[in-house]
Amino acid sequence: MCCYIINGGKKLEGETYVSGSKNASLPILAGCILNGKTSKLYNVPDIEDVRTTLKILEYLGCKVKRDKNKITINSESLNKNTIPDELMRKLRSSVIISGALLSRCKEVMFSYPRWL
Image (tube, rainbow, N blue to C red; front, side, top):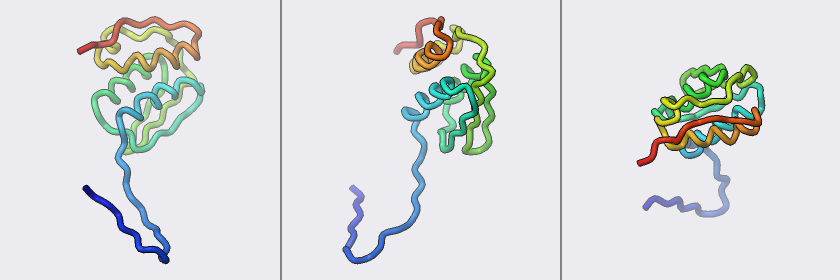
């Protein structure tokens, strides 16, 4: 187990890199639907679940741009309230998007997500 031992009397300063988390990123990506404007996210992991979520957002009409560690999502042009079956079934957490979509569009249609 790692630990830090700090002997008092000295100023503690420095920087560290915290890697992105899928479990934090997916709800934040879904939340980008809500503002109807541009959202910029940093340190989002480049994994299949994130890529699928971005495909769903693009299908719904959001403009998505990924540049290295930054993702820009503009949800102003959101124009659909139905998540297609083939994208919905790619990951279980796709149901997260339905809440944000329901709040924005007042109606949403989607199939069952993939279950293990």
